[in-house]
Length: 381
Image (tube, rainbow, N blue to C red):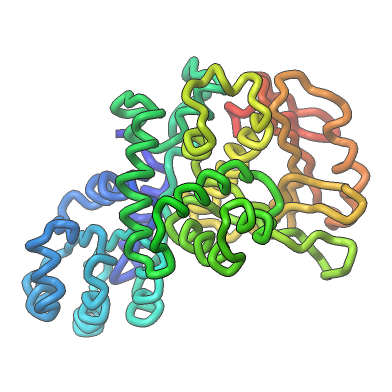
């Protein structure tokens, strides 16, 4: 098993909180991670029908059987009434690290967590492998192959065919999850919507345009985007602002959290197609922005990440604020540096305060620390 960056934080939180809740997309490695971090905990999977029936029909007795034990409850959103009983058990015995909970459906689980376990649980998010976890700096993996495969652990650890594995992922997990949400009744239309959304990864979100192309109402499109966000399929990058004014674009940018899944949905069936694909730049940006999201999630950081665009067409791909430091980042899929890449950042840096760093992440293999900015290879993000 590859070492996950989040492991250290999970173990730290287990020493400080009665419960740890680990959320994230299906197949991101949650079960493997908690079993590895907490080998002495009893493991119960609520996907198992007999365990789920017990938990739903008699939650008091279900939790009572773990008295004096520490337990991992996997896919706890399958039995949401358990959360209230876990609260009762914690309030009776505040021992730390007693309950380790995992869940894949943020829209149902987080409601129960906020109602029952607020102040009693640490909350962590596990996304698919990051580039550093995958070890691309030490591997001969090429850029197009990395983008096409994506970062779901099983594809790499079991050397699965990405085109097949990601198609199965959509059919087996996404469609099953969305069936449980009332707003999604026509799966064929939803599948079309999903593909259209993938074609817009890395773009400023225009809900009306997306809805029109999918043949649905804008409200339905908004609801379905919320489902995808809650299922950790997409994430939104909000626009930067110091003081909101009319010159700044206010719509978020939408990104798929796994670039391989986006490639699969837009019909890329082989890594060689990425070399000349018209969306290659957007897909590369999707991969890099995904690495920023993973860093924040896996290190449990409070960094603020956004993008900048104004009505004059000036744009900075990522604005990362960490404490009193701001990092401006341009993302370019090209393998050869061009001086034009830093001009917008250099011109606008004064708007972001005094402690500002400039970075360019590009598709080349060599990183350089220059006087005015850092040139960062995609391998070294």
